[in-house]
Amino acid sequence: MAKPKVALYWAASCGGCDVAVLDVNEKILDVANIVDIVFWPIALDFKYHHVEAMKDESIDLCLFNGAVRNSEQEKIAKLLRAKSKVMVAFGACACFGGIPALANFTNRAGIFQRVYVEAPSNDNVNGTFPQTLTKVNEGDLELPEFYNDVLTLAQVVNVEYFVPGCPPPVDLILKVIDLFATGKLPPVGSVIASDKTLCDECDRIKEEKKITKLYRPHEIIPDPKKCLLEQGIICCGPATRGGCGLRCIQANMPCRGCFGPPPGVIDQGAKLVSAIASIYQGDNEDEIAKMVAEVLDPAGTFYRFGLADSMLKRKRLQQAEGRA
Ligand code: SF4
Ligand code: SF4
Ligand code: SF4
Image (cartoon, rainbow, N blue to C red; front, top):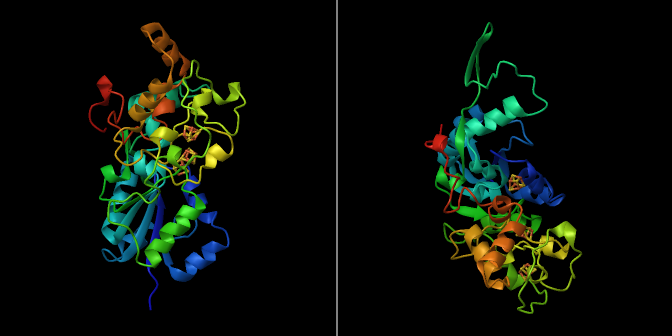
């Protein structure tokens, strides 16, 4: 019997999600035994034209990691969507925009200005920016169009499943492959992780006490048995879906929220702000203002992984209307 066909792709990604798949180590041989990998740019020498030549829906499962921030990524997302029966947003960037979507606090013009003009290592006296088309003697050189916004995969194509994490942990990757191979995938639209919050899975001692100061992780050595949030360290556990195996908590580090919002929560950042406000000892405006001032990087703290998928989606900028 023919083995199911699987494709893997990276878009606006750091490569960590692909490396996480390689991290299954010798079990990758088990995976290769049960599926036929037909496209995986980081590991195998398939080209786009090989995918274009495939029949629609001839790929059984596509694991797509990374957000969508340029025209090439959008084109390949649509191509793989057409060729795949099951499309999986794989990793925090594909699911929620992830770290790349923090760029939605600025826009294309702001990024180009910083990268190609202001960066100290630049020597760009003419202020030349990348062009989508450059004519040279040998022919036309093309670059993808860099969009104004970073988008989640589901904002570009229909997605059947979401596998969160930055990157998804190895045991979750193996679980997805197993669910797929045994025909036990959950209902379409499911997030394949826990249905609880991370706090629900965390067995640190919670004393329900108020805090009077917020600390950054390097400013304090936390008690490894007690709740980090109750020690004044911002931990995203109350606003984050469980299922990661408490990876950061076990290293005595706070959760940064890479599994995205738990069921029923639309905006992870707003939920986290609400959770912190509820345990902060602040009875007046001055004390609340002090708490806000203690969060040195509100954008990166509350929307580290989820800006593109949040209610905000992006910072409103005059120049940022439209995608290009
Ligand atoms: S989810 Fe994390 S590991 Fe995966 S591509 Fe994004 S930043 Fe990299
Ligand atoms: S806030 Fe963090 S440390 Fe505290 S219970 Fe939740 S996950 Fe655990
Ligand atoms: S503890 Fe939080 S940030 Fe760390 S892996 Fe789990 S969900 Fe991600």
